[in-house]
Length: 130
Image (cartoon, rainbow, N blue to C red):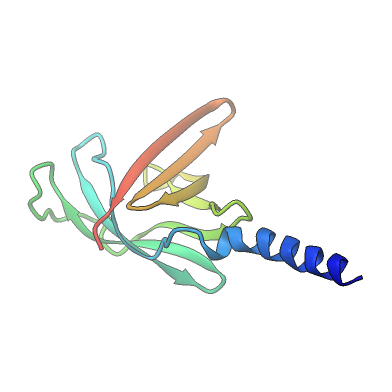
């Protein structure tokens, strides 16, 4: 009986540890340049039981600050943790009116954001600034 309880507790710990030990998503992330060369710095933080990301700064390809209407806008929201350590939620597309279901996975200082429409998938890799 004791052995059965031990196995049960070990199994629960193994299943729950995937999200407990997942890489930290919170912080400031640098996007890849868009078609116009605009790079945004996005702060990821908790929003209720999910995560959201808001643009804090915009820069041109050379790294100089650039005025942009993107500053202050949410680019992802309702990102909810999954058992495998990833997050699923909504990502604002390249055109500001386009919202897509997205998967987000953080590994160290890299964040992979993936959106799919049918069989066609688009992937972006963002890097952690802080």
